[in-house]
Length: 330
Image (tube, rainbow, N blue to C red):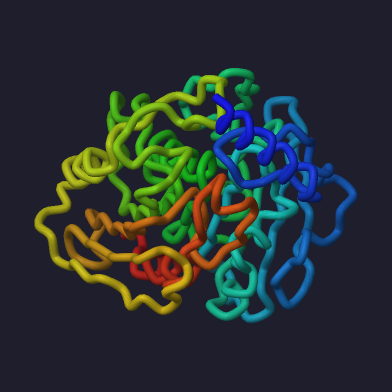
């Protein structure tokens, strides 16, 4: 009990130090700065500023950052990047280590939406969560971008960390046929998702086996740090099997341990593929031995004693785009 109290005290202290809410599976005790009125996101990595777009969905005001790189040939592929619970669109590019910079290099459009009360309604029953119609919000954004010939409707991709990773899966399930491929970081498969018909899009997972908030072996989300109910996940091996079955992905076609580029990060990463690269049935898995509730080569937003270390052995943004770029709806 004394150790738990000490950890909780450290968490509160760390939150007080950070100027923004963190990309966690739970809400920060501090409110992040409002997105409205901020012209440029925190430590934005893109070559120019994004546009802050406001819209109304079912009578509710919503907003997102839209970034169209100078060399993007429109209509272009679009990557939706969803912040974690307690996070915000204002800081997500910084937290993941610069997705906008990669958008400049690869010429894809980047969309960073703002959740409802800093959360995404991903189908889990989460104590205290406002159930915003986030699916309708993103559906409207997609339709608008396609109608304006900004987005190529055959190349709409969704990724996110933690709550944003769960939501990326949920979004694909609800908007059947609109999401081309999904990448889920620090988020497994919730029991709610597992009990419903799984989506059949290509999917990429990035998960650490020492994640203190999303248990690798299944169970309650939040671990020892969070008392409020955040739902539960199935064991990660079962999650992969569930998507393999739903997609009819077939046999193991790749199993490779990545070079240990930074031995001091306390992590080793491996990549596994079921099905053929670029096939609609593909299931790609980055398993991080020793990895925590973090985005590889992203921000160590809290001490590793609380959320685990950041794996430095591969760039998660580049791995996600490499996966997305092989998929296009026919």
